[in-house]
Amino acid sequence: MDLHSHPPSIFRDPNAMVNVPTVTEQSKKDFNFPKVELHLHLDGSVRFSTLLELSLAKGTPLKGAKTVEELKKVLITHEPANLSKVLEAFDLLLPVVRGDKAAIERIAYEMCEDQAANGVIYFEGRYSPQLLVDPKGDTQALQLTSTGVVEAVKRGFDRGEADFGVKARSIVCCIRGLHQYVDDVLRIGGFLNFSCSIVWAVFFA
Image (cartoon, rainbow, N blue to C red; front, top):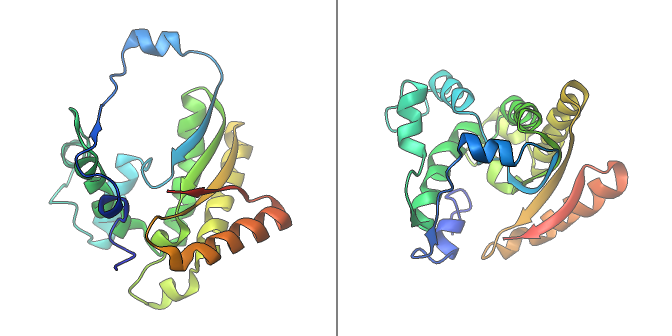
């Protein structure tokens, strides 16, 4: 089984429907208070502008998108759709950031800025470290282990906490059907939490 094709699209019910919430001026007012977010997908919260910049710099195609508006049309689900359709976006965006320590750190840092702008004072970013390791085996990828992914996220979170006044922690994920990586995830979660409180929880997806 290919670890680096997004596994939730394989293991979840493809017919499960996902409703898309609408953000309005009224809803912004209703939720205008300090918030806590405990399950925020790191790889699903990349800024469109950042993703486009990285894609163009690396020559990684995003279905021909050359502008942020074009990219939004490719990635955003505007109406209720099944889960498999919603998760197709991950198959496009993950190759852009895999194996790139600087990009992963940047995404974590920008997540802190975006959360602060949304009034969030504490959040936990959820991701699978193994899915962010580049499978191609080039020089840079060989330097980035699953532990290195978590450490890159931590560097971004640390800078974001200092600059934006939020508190950020990591949740590392075990992916259903990829049981061969469970020990590594538990090792990361146990060691990094014990040594420096990088990882706050282990999640089974």
